[in-house]
Length: 379
Image 1 (tube, rainbow, N blue to C red):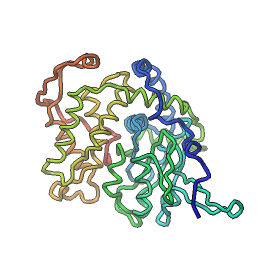
Image 2 (cartoon, rainbow, N blue to C red):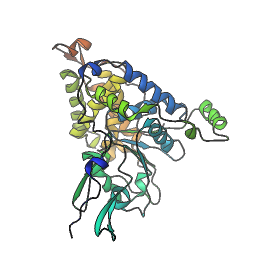
Image 3 (tube, rainbow, N blue to C red):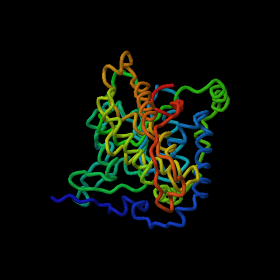
Image 4 (cartoon, helix red, strand yellow):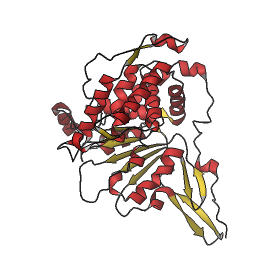
């Protein structure tokens, strides 16, 4: 008996595709609306997440850059709360998956069920068929179940029983995990970690934020009080504008040099992939758009390098030293050292947006920037 889906591709991908949306250079150049919407989303999220501005900003940047986000930290610091608050701030469909050791791949992607009345198989979509998918404690599921997300994260589609179903766009996975070695956890393989655009950690709140938390969450959860401040259509327009931001040849070369330096570094056993270069430029474009610029600066690359590159790198045993439980701080320091040693393009600035300008590379004479709160590893 031939199996066929009872729901059409158009029904499963009911939200218009970002890829198919028309390009409008005038709207891409005018970023005031994007900034206004971006600030509204951040204010909305920060009513729930206290004192974590950098983490919220990187999460929004990843969303606009059409990437996936991995939030890694110890239990109880607000990882899932950040993911839920960001999802509720946008009027899109949301799916949530609680990863457990007995979770099956079909619990993520969906399954074909035989309909006795109609004598045919019907496809029942899983929670991955949503615009924003929250994967809670992703490292508690088996590697087989974790791999169910590989196709959807990279190709925005799901294949079940030989039939391919497109996912609605925009599509973003926000996953959380505990980095500390604990019973019943499975480390994410490098292939899956590489599909996340950025990894951030929440860190513990400061004393003022923790005191404010005791008052605001005494009787109710602030998450129940927030609602969407941006429509799905507005979010797609914001993504188009972020994609249209200009990155000069010199800035692209700078990103390539950074990534290539990770492959040759003496303290790294595994460097960043070409996918990392692509996603670093994409994230930099989104951050530039949120800053009101239609061109990327090297500063955009610098501020995102730790979050975008860190989780893709594997340090050597010599570099790890006694940090066997948590390699995050070691990798952060390595990325900052590479940033300090890589020549920075200087010269034309914004004028390169409209004309070819010769950039010169000069040695980077700057101090290693302080580690942002939203970067990889614990604070």
